[in-house]
Amino acid sequence: VLTAAHCVINKNPERLRVLAGVLNLGRAPNNYKQTIGVSSFVTHEGYTGTFPGLANDIAIITLKKNVTFNNNVK
Image 1 (spheres, rainbow, N blue to C red):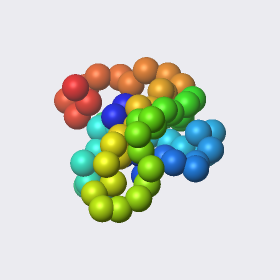
Image 2 (spheres, one colour):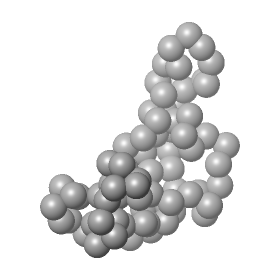
Image 3 (cartoon, one colour):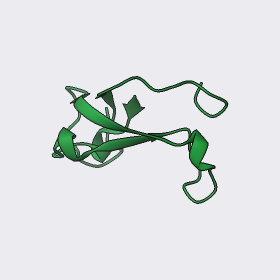
């Protein structure tokens, strides 16, 4: 999963979850929602978390299991 580094930096991967198949948390049918645990993440080596611009604000998340592809997850 591709995300912003500022969303995961200094976080414990065991406490993170990815919600796939949802654009708006309040409007998605339950059968499309997939909550998957995070096993690890890596942030860009050039990310410093400082302004201006938060350069290199990118991270890759590895999930504990695969997502299931459906109409909302492609």
